[in-house]
Length: 362
Image (cartoon, rainbow, N blue to C red; front, side):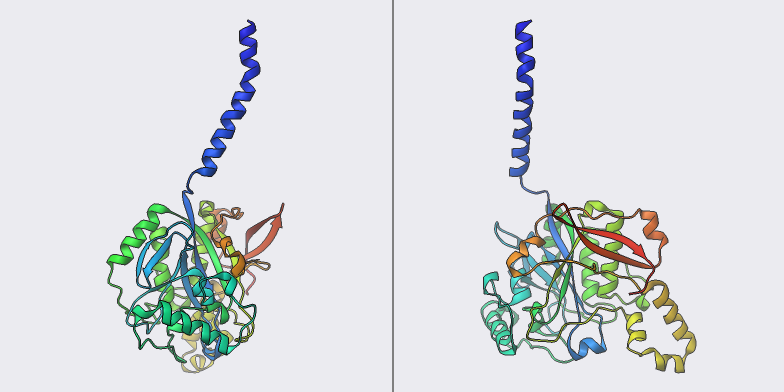
């Protein structure tokens, strides 16, 4: 009897030891999920005023690159790559750039200046171009008013503000994406109407979330835009909290350009920029259809009122898991043709993004 009592007294200690052992194993075990993000980049400059649809790219934490056009899995300590599609990049369909150089044209976050001018930006970009982008050729265009060039691959934070819409991926998904992109011909067939940057992101997101990112007629007359593909991801995350969805803002580094502009879709641009006026004159029925497209499906908020902001010194926030968003039910998402309105909060010292639905236009 005494032995039995002694065993019972020792049991809490054994349970505590067992619990501590499990916690140590869980902390020491490799993470099953890594972070990826759809990067929604604001338009800038004169062309960004004429066509304020912006740009979209994909950040992948666990995937790195042997060269700008050949992928591999990352080694410990590497931060992953940003992969994107631009026109005029030596005939390649996509190019991969490490995260920090993509944003700031340098490898070391400590070297990112707090403020820049045109001379500084040109110097940083040219240095990175000479040292890292040789495989893309000596005659790689810098870009023009209408077409992007290699300068849009490095130092993007000097041109515009970016919003990162994060989601979780598995190592199996990442490895399969590396294999798929390395095996496919990396040859550009860029077309702004049906094979643009957002179409490439639609392909990548479809790899992680099959059958969820097909082309749609509404909004934007069937054109895939950065804003709409982001909305599709937000809508999917509402129904699937396991995506570990969160939103971060990467501010524009001041000094080089004026503040970048808000992102619009095609139908939204036609009305906000006044392009719909000649359409009304030529064909009021088409104009009416565009108006219906804009009012029913073309107005939605994507950016939190108070987003979590990250700079070059804390870019690891793109990698570290954040609390899950609180999401409405799937029926709420499906039943609302209005806007997805997001607001950031801090709860118990943790940054949380709460998502609610609103029919109020942006």
